[in-house]
Image (tube, helix red, strand yellow):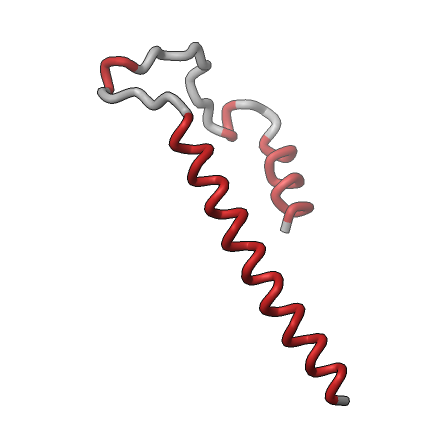
Length: 70
């Protein structure tokens, strides 16, 4: 029984140490990415305007997808 508890505690501490190390690596990678300094430097990307579901004649598809996801 003591061995089981020791293994569980070891696992918990080892995963906590590893997860902190991974988060630290992500922060370093994020610092290397070029980020625009002002809103004017963003370039717009083409996109279609949003369409209401009831005007698509496929509202059943949206409802079915939502039902299956839930």
